[in-house]
Image (cartoon, rainbow, N blue to C red):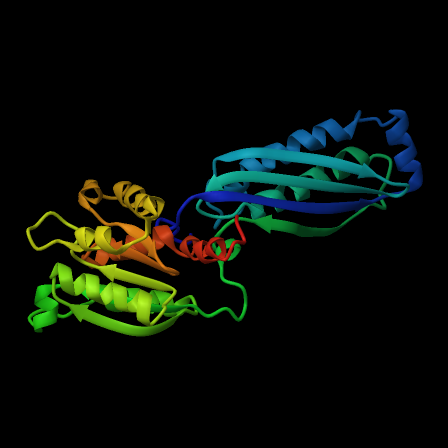
Length: 302
């Protein structure tokens, strides 16, 4: 199975369909309630619901998913029955297979209950109609290129006594998303240096995004939040709240972070903790959803 432990839970939905082709005479018997096994429609609907809930028991690589909704409807034509299914969940991975399994099993159930009167039936066109949710919903529009900077706040890294890995990881993750990392910088944990650096990125270079790492803890030299408080025009508390909630599910130490996020001019600035693991988890929590903030700043809303 694919490891989804680092994914966030998002609203997921999928719609699928299957088509059962049959003789017009069989459709007539169905409409008139003359079938020897009874009305197959309600049975097929229940079968679809059960199939969606048990998809992981049938398909080996499917994750067990707590489903919030399973729907199944039938469009009866002159010589066909179109089965349509819809599945919803709030989870880390999609529900496409649940919707497809539901549609397939519903069609098989119809086939089973109709086969005493029709041996010509064909199940076809089992397909995914639509899926929603996941990272693809929050990706930047094709061709849009954000200019970003990565800043490491660390006395030891600035002096050369310690090699930075957290900042380089941030840089790599941003580049994977297609962002243009115009500068990577290591500076000491001095409040005025942090303030001047962030102001330069916002006011002079007019960058879209600045992500910092380090200086968010409880030691005397951890002054990144204080520097942020003095230079941002407005805070965006939800960004770091999302990172802390995500981290808290993995370690109780996440609650000790004092990271902030905010906007100065047209630049979004986000503080992340200094440890490599905390940086990885924080990025898992806020990317790519953070990028939607730029659409909001352009007045596009939600």
